Image 1: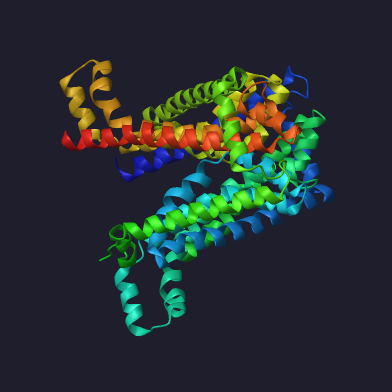
Image 2: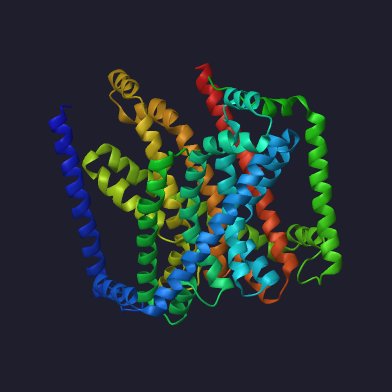
Length: 257
Length: 264
């Protein structure tokens, strides 16, 4: 295919994608005409509610709170995941326990199990929300960083060891820099998951945050707010991914497993 | 050139040390659990014995057994629906490239970013508390997983092989059966494998919020009765079941497929 034809195809593709999107929204609007608002509100109603929420200080406070919790949980999960991933590097015998016992356990433990246990253990509190998020995010961080540890360049490490006997120095000069792309990859995956489970955690473990707002709206059969909040989260997710994580990926490189 | 880290490679030569670590970990974990259970009320941390006995209940009590089967049913139907829908969407994008951007750059990221809880809460408003709500929620959450995996499979297809197949036979069904499906199979299995693992987690949540049967529903009742033993028992059942199906089901099939292709 010539380059002009490829360009034309890409152009048509894009146009169809945008038209398709408009068509889907139009279909939504048509469908919502015949249904009561508490079942399916139309796109205009949802859009208006989104605009109202965007300037509502109470909602913004909830949103900021959720965001702060996600940030804390991501940090803790990354640190714990990295520590667990590095353990086999310094104590090779522990590899089996970390990668074949701990990882599958955390990976297949149902999220709702963590939610209920944390609510029973810590009641309704910040600890509950953070604990749930960390427990669910941990395997995602661990998998990626462990992969980074596995492909560490042995020659570079050997070179490092021949220059210095201080392990901390080798760690900060060689191990850490080689792992950064894997951290970025882990961050991207975990960030996406974090938004979804933040809602779940706040639904049960908090009296504030976006998850709580959504639950209240659902109890009041307020579909408009539920949908508006969902779209807000989609928007925030995309923004965070494009602005923060993409920037990190461009700066440090990204490796995903 | 990169090679495996020396220390890591050592691990395979030191099975004793791995065994030692494993024993230390399991013993430590078991001891911590027993000690914690001794000093805490049962509704906070039940002992291993109580949990094990409760797990046995799921084998012996018909009502609990049928809840587990209901969850399995929800997951299987939802995985199937997501798989078919994802397959159809991916095929449309592949067959008619003008729809590629719409499907892969608009629809897929949207479903990927939309929260599962959001779907569950909306589905309750739409379909009430029912099996349909649960299956719908799980299927919608799984859709992007199937779509992305099947897309990868279609993208990796060897055009030359397909062309050769078409030149050997005019019957599209025959080329599909003998060439297309075998080439796609590893990706289809991968899509099913991921969906099955994620599906269980979503199904439990959906059943808890919106179901009238299934393990999530049992968990909901257990939570209201502060029956921590049952919550842990169900979680462990899921861990073991998902691991066993993954290791002895999907992993085996994938290994068989890869050796079949290598010998071919």
